Image (cartoon, rainbow, N blue to C red):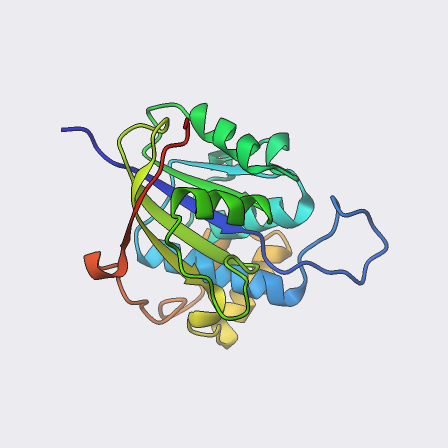
Length: 217
């Protein structure tokens, strides 16, 4: 029996607009780093470590991928960059998915709006739009359980926003500061005497919403 694919779409954390730099080189701000760490710890608690992470090469997206990777104690070798994800259209993102190796069972894409909102709406057309109209604010993760082939995606989805997760406490903030300063996350986490975050609610079948759509259609 074929094993279903799992697609994780993560929009980058909130970026810093108070810098004299190009859009491509805009870094994450403090809030964006904290929210990204929250998402990374949630993924670790849910045992959703990806086989492959493909990120936009833009600084805010790549930093998001690196923080999430460290939060899950994954090697940064798990991360690849794809220029097409930066400023990608729906068609561009569909092409990215069509070229994913069949050996990859769980894929994490890290990128930007409006492309990610368009892809999520395409794959999960019944996704309810929040009152603020933002389907994927910064540091929002969409988790989709899919068909066994990357060329035709259908299944179920769940959306997790960093703002709905437990806030980081002092120990976790220290972990984040060390991580951002370049100290390996695995080494710094050994200095903590308890779990980095309170256990998140596990994904249950009732949390998943059916969706049907094909990438190649």
